[in-house]
Image 1: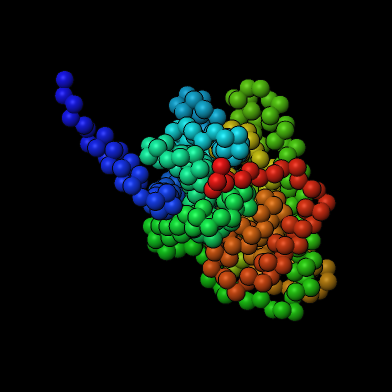
Image 2: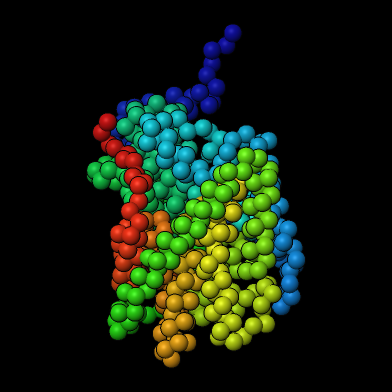
Length: 449
């Protein structure tokens, strides 16, 4: 019997030898760099697949008339995702990032290999068919699972494995948002990585490579590209404080309403009935407000650029033109976005919770400024308020203000708006933390055991 090693075995033994001869910290940096490259490429593939699927399904829609297909397409996407989980991967992929957090908190670092690819396909079906959520949850899960697989393959010690899993999740966030600093802040704030030098350097390496890889592969285009420059007038600082308070109260509503609906879905024992009910709710909401179809980055960009038609496209209300009509439609989207997101993520779909908070905040900020202008006869720059409130809503709902601040400025490219973004995100987070203290405590990914 031949004992000649296969090419795969040669590669594995060489990799183990190379990493084993290097200092532990340098081994971690090499693994983090490779992980960032994989996460960035995976983010590009996922974005491309979702865009291709969505274009295939809605390219024949016409503006100005009801598009009855919206009553069917999102529900079909949820049912297909349920079937994919049940018959193909045979695992529940919903809220995958929460599962990863729980496992690592309990000292379980052997993340199933299914999570390296399963969430990507499931998310493509969910979001491509109109699920009103984001792709960040699945890509973070994919990054963490890839890190776990790499660490096992290279026989890394437990300390390095914990850190690498955090790097993988952060790299996924950095790649999907094209926001390297946002990815770093996600792992530090949401996952609770310890602020030791070596882990943070590894995390920065992974997130920078992931973010720039995704950015380069998509043609160096931002997800929320703005054509009209946004400038902050310091005289608006008082209004920004009020906007921060508004975002805080809205965040509490968003979390409460979404939590109620999630508990309702959890009480339905059959995955098929749950999928049908959630798909039905989602389809009706998207039919009424097509702007909520998919992740909604294009709609956010157009609204911030002053194109109010973005919220009316393909809808029953596309011929509405009065300011009051626009406010009512915008208010409707602000109210039901949390229901659409929860129907997507907790009823059978596989997606993320971060992007919906950006979308909700964008419309909430626009609603706030437009309402003040209508009632008070003022001329507040509603576009500024829409951009800044994205961070306010994410900070209050996710309770991660630093991540929210950097994701918003990196996604839009407007670092000059940092000051109002910091004000609004900080006030929103502080208000929510004060009025509804969270029982959730992030786990710590520690460099030392």
